[in-house]
Length: 371
Image 1 (cartoon, rainbow, N blue to C red):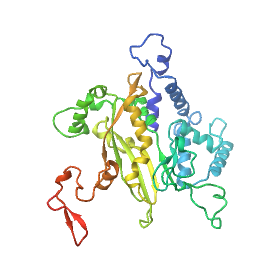
Image 2 (tube, rainbow, N blue to C red; image 1 turned 30 degrees about the horizontal axis):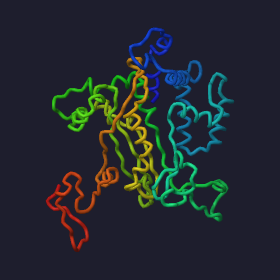
Image 3 (spheres, rainbow, N blue to C red; image 1 turned 180 degrees about the vertical axis):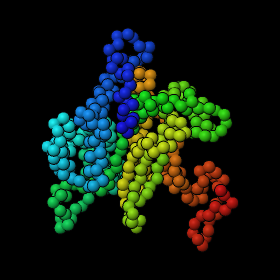
Image 4 (cartoon, helix red, strand yellow; image 1 turned 45 degrees about the vertical axis):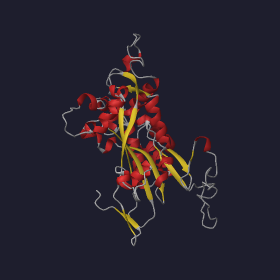
């Protein structure tokens, strides 16, 4: 992350391009816009040394390291603030530290490392957001969004608080796709699928896939711009606890940008967590309810586009993105697509030609001679 930030603020033409009075052939303008300039200036200030002569930590890296320790050790917000106060007293006045946990957390918010939390219906009928944010019960099934707290078992921390039954966390997609082009290092790889790819009939990258090529034929305007991003979506549930008997299911929804070359596109640093669903049970066929915010952003990318700064060319451009396919096991495929992956016609490819046989004694279908 620090390396990517350094690349983003290290572009030499940022300051010079802002004062240029010459008209630019680019309709969106040369150099970063005001919003991007403000962000890059913030990064430049945060990347200054923690104190004069310090080579190991920058202001940003030191604060992020402290926040990481807070999460790993389970410190309270109050204890973190007390630690910052102690460090400010013990260290020289040249060391720049935030005054409280709120100020430290605000730095990560300004960087875009944040998420939105919404309450969800206990039966996964809807999300309590936008115009439904102030509702106390589901508009569809009338289930209360809050837990019933037993007064005898409640403690002072939960007393008077309304605890939601279910929540979902959403990580906005727009700023993270923009960050890929704000770094001159990663921006140079974002057009590999069009300019660096060799079409020799060997399947070594998703761009060699027939589905990718058919998509390009049907959407020539989208395919002609090498900036436009192709995405894959992966989703599945797992139990995050060591004790596997614990009734819990966590469903992460991850996006993968396929513009990058083969050695990069499937690496962990470029996986983008988009939705995180926590529940005693999986979302099942109602996972589309939790994907609504992501679908809205994908529609914005597809139709209007998002104004983005390219550090490599020092220009603004309209970034578009498209979701090509999903990656999942067979049961999760049924949840995401709506196709019933059980029963007489369980195979989505064969449909009516599925070779299924009902076992009268076993009371279930089997698929003989079917692969």
